[in-house]
Image 1 (cartoon, rainbow, N blue to C red):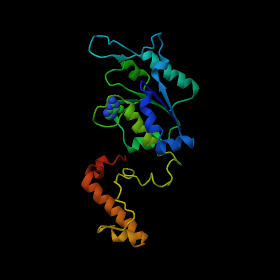
Image 2: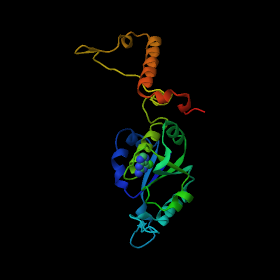
Image 3: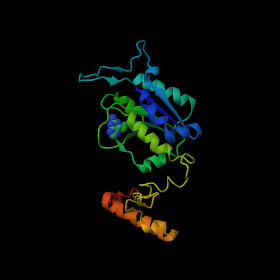
Image 4: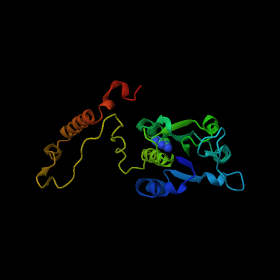
Length: 231
Ligand code: 6GU
């Protein structure tokens, strides 16, 4: 899979993509992540990427030309399955969407600046608008990093234990059960006896019960028929 990110702040991606699982996935060539500075595609000599809004109002607006040029340049090189725009008024990102995106070959993520982007970009250059939650961030960069993380860890071979993504919270609309490690007794705080029993059937049953119990308590919305995300 290849993910191309278009942003005015490429530095914001340096940390998240150079540590831990994303770093290893890149090194193992399971994913290619390319971060492009939109300013490099500016079409005027001052390297401008924004301009004053028509009709007045405060603030600047991201111009269409650099973004058009950046997307066109990428599309000349390869076919893209999806051009995604990050914006708080987009469709809510969830596990189901992450699963779907992780099956695609090539995607572009344009990092938005809410209110501050020429509407024609959204109308003509974008396939899907996505938000990561009901709060407003200063820009779409952190949202793009969050989405990239959620997508990349689902690519086969990225996680050590192939099954571990399948047992994630949300994959079956259940939260994960609690987990424990040694010591089995820490100052009298004990690991549930059943986990030490060696009876795998009983242990699996216990994990499922705990997952359901935890979901009922913390996220009853996930158990609503209407909300299962399955159709
Ligand atoms: Cl995608 N962008 C911004 N600016 N804020 C957000 C968001 C995106 N998702 C939630 N809040």
